[in-house]
Image 1 (tube, rainbow, N blue to C red):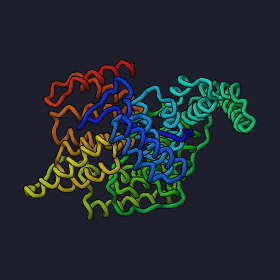
Image 2: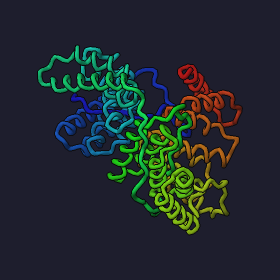
Image 3: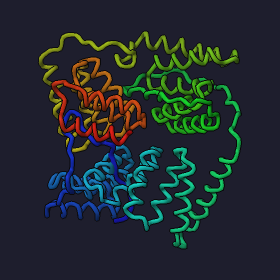
Length: 457
């Protein structure tokens, strides 16, 4: 099997089931036959056919790790990256000893700029196959991009020692260059350059159904202008590619690195506005108004605030976007029945790890019954499966507003915050779940939460 990729970030499904695989699933004859069809289709470049074959293999033997890995590879080739990554992670959970799944998880996470997940995956892969230099190169790149220079240097040096293939010497040269750059950066004094103020405006646009990224609470004790500028450039590239959600994450990272970065705040407001989150956009542009000394920038920000307020007044925004308390009017029995059908359909899709389809069903469900707490919990689980952790956290928080007596959102929030590397928040919610006496609490998940609390200490 050629190296491709494979992953998810789903260690649980709060609503449906949390499956612990004691041993890798042994495929049936039918599953093996379907798997071989998938492999041939993958090698032949007929990726849709490959996906269908891998699905057949998983229907015959649920939890068949190699089929999950193969499906992830085919999905990645089809540019369905979030779904592919979900499959790769599922494969590592189904069979933690499947080396290729860990490699693919690392590779795909790195390509989607989730460098923290990539580093963890490559760490596992290099432990399982220390002879393969490719794993160490990927590990070094992941450490470098996640601001762990010492670890990156060590991994690059290990790669250089292990890489003997003549065709790969260009990567040896790149590794040497990266080592030199990292060592030079470590020797330089802190950069005190100031970021610039915005020179262009982006006005508010139509709303979307996406949820806003959660701000990271752990701000640096000292501003980091270089990191802030790099993250802002990253956000600019995402905006050019119309990847607005990814852009908002990068701009938020830029502002976290330097809270007084006027341009970063301005662009973060722009990204929120494009996503339809006018309240958040207004907040960021208001900060620009209070910080900037440039009258032109102040006027542009104030004009954008006015437009956003008009949009918010005309559309009202979603209850989550506007921060309103949950509430809904009477729902007809036929409407409620249709909503529950969408919900049940989504549950089945989640169990099959078809997270993209499940998300669509849950969106339809919640349009019909917008105060269905289990619908938000299920959607949170689906978003976790798609690695959209910030959005998942919003849904779990909203479920708690709808019913504060539930425990499932506590566990979901812990998982979402762990996915965002917000360790303190994750610990808080794992502990709350462990201590919960709610009627929906599950002993096996409490045990899992205790284990993860130990890991996070």
